[in-house]
Image 1: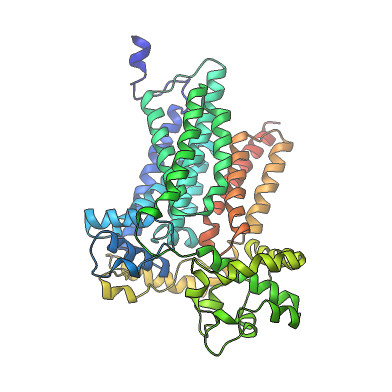
Image 2 (image 1 turned 180 degrees about the horizontal axis):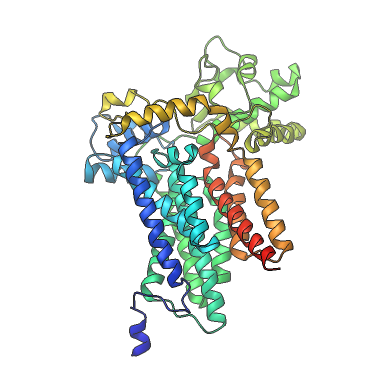
Length: 484
């Protein structure tokens, strides 16, 4: 009876997977996260928005029945997880604004708690404070985009894996004594994080194998590991069925990336005969040809050939599901000239990792879209400290290139690999750090397969995980060196 009642105690024992000191550190992290969220709310209310944010908001209004626009004007352009959440917020609060506060709070708490587990209280709080004033991070935390949520969710999953790793070691030694409520919180964090990862962004599927393998490796007893993997696969299956339940137009969003790659291959060929045989004139706007599309093409985004003036391709013909010319021609060109496919991918990867001389990952600090105001949705800051937003915008604009260059992926991946190598050499490397590095690599690998554009928001989840890897390995290596 005494052991059973011990499951419900609030304070963990010395044999728990979370120590008393770490629990106190979590409290400080929560306090810091709350203050940060309050400041963001005062500055950015009702939250920052881009064109993607605006489109999701209008879609959410249709779901919530708050617009007279008919359903046939809407499409499955985005994964619908965030849109469903925005719709729920509209029903409950008549606004999507509270969501960015929830996102910011969850992001800060998960990043801070993960750092506590990996590097200790002082280092965690100092690192979290620096990250909170780093413009690319705090602007995305205040934006109605899927990337802040995805970052928070991946950090939450990482916390669960770290704690399950600890529990596996404790159970192997026969010394685990974790309170039931702690285990319940971990399970809820894992399930919510999994739902966000699976329904907010499509490319997160590349992280799931790592999560599944870690669950089989760490979770004990075996039936729980099997149940966890079954839940992961079940949620993955359900996430693919969400769109089937929403009567909106289907669009081949992958084709918009494929046409960018396709035109890139033709551009690299410099072969007029090949370009003529594989032209896309049938889907070019009136008066434009494939040569015009090639001229507009660059290695940073597909926007230039479909959405930026002068427009060269008819977007509706690019993303249509039936009889898609891009889908038909793409594999034929790859089979005939696989060398062009390899060269094209290398060119895109140079942009993705920041190896181009003028590459800089743009982050959210642009003016909010205004076209949504006709539908009753506005992203214009109206908080008590809204004037600060203008000052931040101007400062970021003046230091735009310098700030963007601090987000170049090859720098952060390079530092993480160096840190892991040094930690391994000094025997300070731990499995949780390796798992975080693998998660960061796997997430970004999704954009190496299919890439819509080069932007910081696509790199943000990997960036935050890599910062945690670098900080953890630096601290452990330094401690190991000082005690050598």
